[in-house]
Image 1 (cartoon, one colour):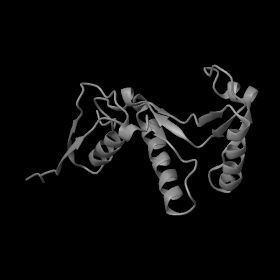
Image 2 (spheres, rainbow, N blue to C red):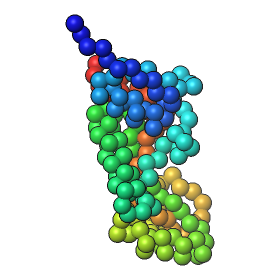
Image 3 (tube, rainbow, N blue to C red):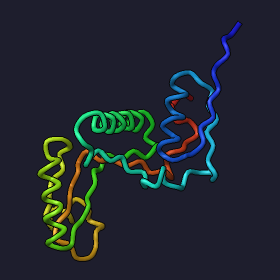
Length: 160
């Protein structure tokens, strides 16, 4: 006699719903994964698929953000079709006042998440697609993204 598997319904095909579906399958559950569209195309809680480690206060919140990034890196290695991009983030500033705020934020965060202020030339090297005028940018190498349009795949756990 076979043992019945638990059933789970996950609503939402963005990065949060996909992560829940992946780990429910890995835990042995039968999963029905639903989204309002045939393929994921919306952003999870409007975060545009960003996994933001930068700016998190030391302690439980930073530890949780780092763990989420670690889990997504694992899923990305196991199933490249999920669209995990360990590409960091760049936030640009265009005025001296914004630059002062950015530098103060970096001074407060440096020991935790490793963000650095990059001048214009370095920012353009990090993200050649940036256009327009700006002075500098905040580069956070630990940030990542999951392309929600790629996140839902037919076999998110590679189980065949």
